[in-house]
Length: 271
Image 1 (cartoon, rainbow, N blue to C red):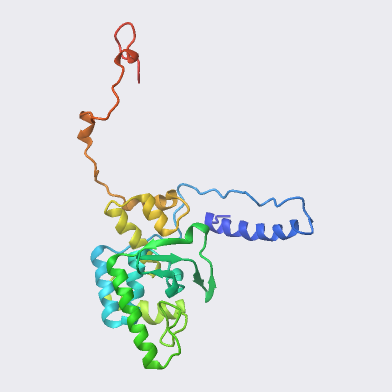
Image 2 (cartoon, rainbow, N blue to C red):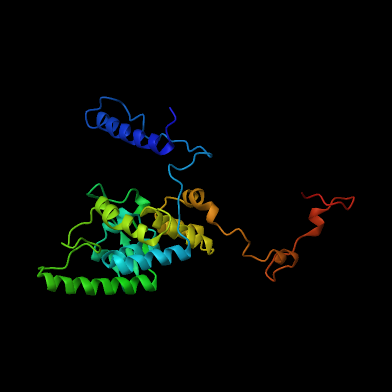
C-alpha cells in the first residue's frame, strides 16, 4: 500500500481501541488481536519531512527578529529553541508548570487542533531544564504579564504562559499565519516551521557533543534510538576522545595474564 510506518501505527492504534471495546465488558471476542502487534520500521524509510534545523547564527537572527517585530512571542520562540518542546507543548504551558527555583519545566499537557490533551506518550510527560537565559527571560515575561493584567483590568493573571492579547489560548494556525510566517519573511531565512525549533534544539546540542541519552530524555523520546535515527547526521564527526590513550595503560587497569593467552608453541591464541 505504500503507507508510512507512522500511518500504519495510527491505523493499528485506532483498530486496537475498537477491538478493546469488543473485548470488554461484553466479550464479543476472546482477546484483542491487535494488542502487542509491533509495527516494523524500515531502515531506509525517510521521514515525511526532513528536519530543517537552524544554525547557531540563524537561531540568533530569528530570535532577534521576533524580539524586534513580535515581542509578545519572543519568549515563546526562545523557549522553543532552548528546550526542544513541541509547539503544542509550548502553547499548553501554564505558569504552575515552571519551577523558577530549580530552572525546570514540567511538561504535562499538549494542545492539538485547539484541544487540550496530554502529551503524545508517557515519556513525553517529563521535566525539561531551562537555561539561565531562558529562566531570566520568563521571569521578565511574567512581570510584564502582571503589568498587562493591571493595565487591562483583568481579575487575574492568564493561566497560560504564552497567550493571546486577550489572555486566551493561542491558536496554532493563527500563530503560523499571522506571526511565524511574517517573521520568517522579515528574517530573510529559508522557510521553516515552528517544529524546526525542536529540530534545532536537538541538532545544536548534539553538535556540541552533549549526551545522546540526555538529549533524548529532554525531548521526550521513548528511547535514544529514536533520537539517533532522527539526528545521527548532527553527531560530531570528529572524535572528542584521545585515541592515543589506547597505547598506554591506565593505572587502574587489570593486569592481563599472558600465560592464559598463549599456547604451548608460544603463539597467541586469542582473536
